[in-house]
Every structure is written in structure tokens, then in C-alpha cells.
Length: 137
Ligand code: CMP
Image (cartoon, rainbow, N blue to C red; front, side, top):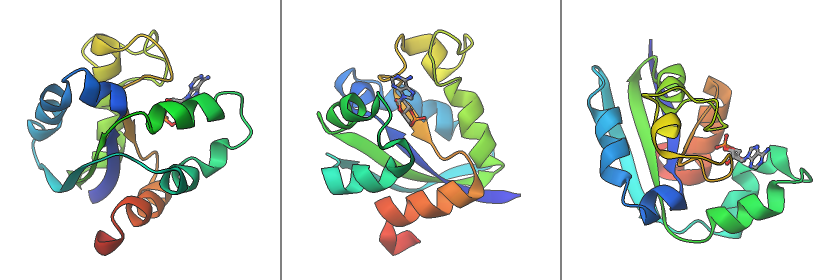
């Protein structure tokens, strides 16, 4: 089934020069395409909406600081089973539990700075696409 998902390459990915590496892994998957893509420093209002479910958690404030510390790349990726597929490419949230060959497993070490976000369900994808790319919602 063709789906759309919202992907963020977080500020650590951009700062470390990993945009090409990560985009390349996404681009090489058959039957996927990048439908929208923008380099953007995320503002507090956008991040508050995106991370609404995490308000009050101990990692929320440091996460907000990190996510607004520099530019991110926001993308809509479209294609066959892309919602689960990108999360498989990304690996587990904690990079130490992410397998080799995954983006986080290969390049990250701590949970906050885990390089990439990808929507976790069709409902999240629709909600997040509306936040980051209202013109594509
Ligand atoms: P993501 O799944 O994109 O969205 C929530 C983010 O919060 C997650 O990636 C991590 O960057 C961060 N996060 C989640 N859990 C923790 C945690 N226990 N400690 C620090 N950061 C976390």
C-alpha cells in the first residue's frame, strides 16, 4: 500500500554532514520517492505541536533545546509501506539497541541525538505532515 510519512533529519544529522548518507539510504529503496524536502531551523511553536505527547516528560526540555539548536531537514517520503519501512531503516530509538545497518545503529550513540524522526502510524503521519507541510496536507 502506498503511504506518506513525515521524516526529520535532526540537527545532529545536518551538523555532522549526514544528510547525503541518510537521504541516499531512503532514495535507494525501491518504490519510494521524496515528495517534499526543506532545510529549516524548527521554531518552538512547530516543535511544541510535533512533540505535544512528550510535554512534561523529563527529556522534553533538553529535546526542545536540541531540536531548535540548528537546521533540520523536513521531508515527506511517499511509497510502498514507507511508514514502517523508514522506521526499520532508522532502527530503534535508543541507538545502542539499534542494529548494525540501521541509520541510528551505524551513526548514533545517545537517544536524544538519534539523527532521524519518522512518523509511527498513518494517524501520526497525517498529523505531522499538516504541521510541517500544510500545503501538502
Ligand atoms: P523521536 O522518536 O523522533 O521523538 C521523540 C524523541 O525524544 C526521540 O526521537 C528522542 O530524540 C527523544 N527521546 C525519547 N526518549 C528519550 C529519552 N529517554 N531520553 C532522551 N531523549 C529521548
